[in-house]
Length: 487
Image 1: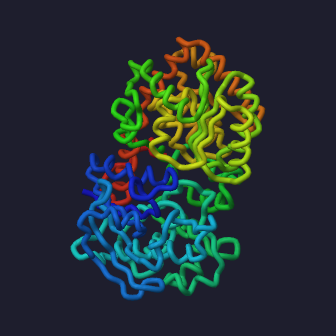
Image 2: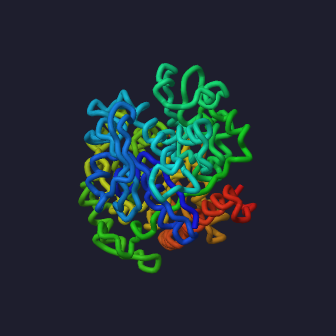
């Protein structure tokens, strides 16, 4: 049995702002089948502490980044949790990263240095009777853990740094260094210095024993300047340590045969039952019952996600015979643009400015098309949910989108392998061309049904990817043979 601690700033179903939580929430159970036991180390936000089932205090720190703290171990949300109970850092309402003004908490540098340092303490065996083999760190919020392990007193534990989105890096000024509790060698050797300041993600990528990201294509992309966001040189230098392992989804939480959020359940042999969900979706978004596909969006509304392009082409989508159901929040300019489209096109465009887990399931189970026009996308989960639920993905050819959706070009349709629509480059014109191509495919009812059902048969579970992670863990520990397909 391999013991792994997953160090993360969010985990579903306890605390979620995006796909990171879905991944860290689903991977532990998938790894259990490969003799890997995972405990998740997460900040003790109110939602986390409130969900702990019979938590036990397993370590105490009287002086922990400006206050007292405890490690509380227990079960929550079906997971083995170690919560960093530090009220002065985490007992705050709402979003885990943003204050009421929607700006980063000014002490985020301290809050996530503390999370990383807690990971280091766990790697040292501070929990009596427990010492992990692997510290698996996710994104910049846990990026200092590998640096603590590499530069502070040695622990003998191996570290992995997983990049879910390299655009978010945790960059701060040098004046915080003396408060990080990190040995000065990390500064001397360049492990933490980043363009004249401090980089948390850079530290993790420099120091970890192995690096992963969430799709093979993204692993290639981030080694170049177009997608590397300033870290491409380091990643190129460490290319032999970098592996792209595609994300999966929790196919128990996302199962259209039993999903409680759906009025009508269905499988790949009963897609006609989706009609009941489509009606419920149209009612929820005030869409009329005219012919034509419902294009949907479930996303943060940001430039990265390409949703400014949707604002540009919304009128043309309606003119072509499509309808839009949009769920999300984000950049005010994009929000306002989509709200304007809904006002101009009553019955054709519906916009809910929110995050709503249940409604996102209804959209996947009732809409015809899932729009994901991202400018870059490390993996993407929305298109995987779409495949699982017969909501045909229309995606840009980047990152994990390119790895998971097979374009319905003529040859792929003829060969019976197409699962969605893929477009490039990421421009308003190319997106609109893809929309027109999608509408033509939708009008070929038999072809559309086949593509829909083929997508639903795709293996989007964690099974294969969990096996790859387990082999990576084993390779680091020298207990399993490597698999050439991992690279």
